[in-house]
Amino acid sequence: MRYICPFLSILIFRAHFYDFFASRSLKPVQRYPLPAATTELEKTEVDVRHQLAEFARGLDAYKRLGLAFENVVGEAGTSNNIRVVFTLIHPTESTRRYCFDVHVSPTDDSYAVTACQPPVAALERLVSQLNATNQFSVFVQQMRAEFVAIARG
Image (cartoon, rainbow, N blue to C red; front, side, top):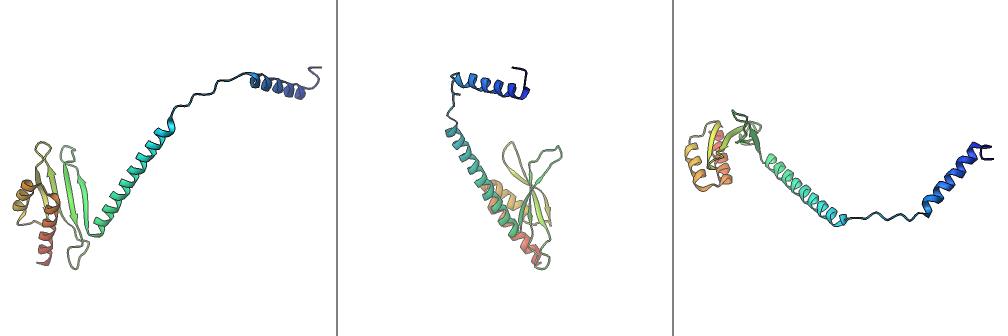
């Protein structure tokens, strides 16, 4: 009678199979306290996303003001140079670029301007003041003022 109907024998086998495992007492899987770690990780991820959004907003604000920062790769493939680019300076040519490259020395954290377009007459004085005070934002503002003076002629 076992071989009369293959479909029926499969159903009977499945029923016995399920009864066998249902009668066994399986140990519950031990869970580790992941929810706390997960919430900390999620919290960190949210903080990082928030910081990235803040940086993106800041960069957008700088771009709207006509200020951009670019990474300049040096001779040996190192990137110790930062190019500061100003636009929106010239009264009739708002897309004209006024820029300078700043090299930051890895040994003594001193600044040096390696390129400046158009040339600024007071550049040496401004760079020495930057190295004395270490106020990069003030230096950028002073360079913009010099570029505005050049644009106005």
